[in-house]
Image (tube, rainbow, N blue to C red; front, side, top):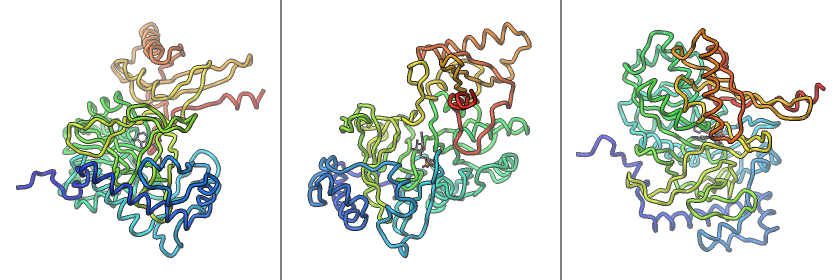
Length: 443
Ligand code: DLL
């Protein structure tokens, strides 16, 4: 008899590595030839480097190819990187980004099938199966999270409840009434859901929900612990980005020790972001991906800005596809305060190490008249930690500041703010409010 979690879609997760490398090379050669013939922008780049598709004879030869970056997508907005005629493109998605024009991605019918296949494998890895009822609270629309998870759940044969984000009270009602067994959303939105449920007198630990597929933003082990305590579910970290297709580039298995990459579709490399040299397995650097089976808009050596490392050691689960370490940082998220490089996730780790902290925090950066930068961290705490004694609150604030200092090496004040002061997010949370240049403009 087949075990409950056996699913034929997952067989590719166990492909012998020599065979995987053969598949990767064949697909890489095909995609590079396709890109060179059909995308003028990239052909010019390859010509400038003096590299031709026929130069790709081994997987290592990928290092000869030029990189692609987010700026290239902006510069060729909207369809300049499409490698096929619009008649073959069945869907567009776009990501808003922080500045200016969005970036646009296009898919053929076959590209969508590959994406759906990856999402099926991802959900299967998280133990989702037929009979499961999955609430999909990723935003539907141009964002890839909603439709990506939606079609994956359906293709797997589980039941999808397409709630999208928002209307949180109704989400909790449906979760309870439908007997939802799993949820897909950002980790911050799930925390919000848990809190709202508490206010409504619903204890998620008593509902059938048992699994969460969380991603689209960096989150920490501390956050996982909070989520699992609050809800009693098992939390899986799913990774992806619009440029690769969307969610489902990789996901954790039940060992929760790194994110398995679907390497038969996304070829990973780690580079030194300064020198652009390829780094050996185990070394931390910038994650670079090549889509080797996507034809409407292939991305070759795309610099993700996400910082991680490849874990080459086999995983205890027995899958042969390799893992990357959890992505807790993006090079874009980094800010410098008094000469020290700071990532929001480091602050999250420091805060959540203290008893009573809630994962609702924000970091406000300002510039003083004398030109020095200040950082203020605001955090909410649980009811048990709130005290009307000023002294007790001051002590707790010091504890937070000390815990953050242990990680960052610099001291910054931490202010405990009243419950619900920090705006809750339905999608990706905004943690850093950099007002340094605003001050300057005013003065
Ligand atoms: O966020 C796709 C997605 C949807 C992934 C739902 C997972 C779940 P973008 O909006 O293009 O696509 O943002 C991609 O989000 O480069 C990372 O910086 C960040 N990111 C995504 N997943 C994770 C994760 C979607 N699990 C960017 N951990 C990526 C950390 C993540 N960061």
